[in-house]
Length: 66
Image (cartoon, rainbow, N blue to C red; front, side, top):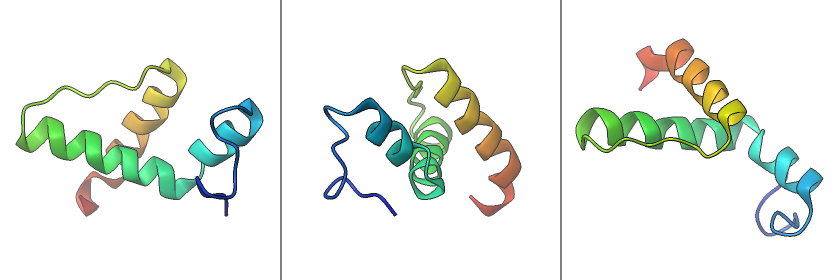
């Protein structure tokens, strides 16, 4: 498992991608997005459209767990 401590997520695009696409990271971003939009009325949009689409699908699939 990659972490921000053992991956060069700032300077290495491949390391950043493999870090960001771990289920744990997707889950964390999805929960943050879901919570802020539902309970705080704060719109959260990831700058990467592809990643945003993955987050939306993840929320839709796991909405009953949140």
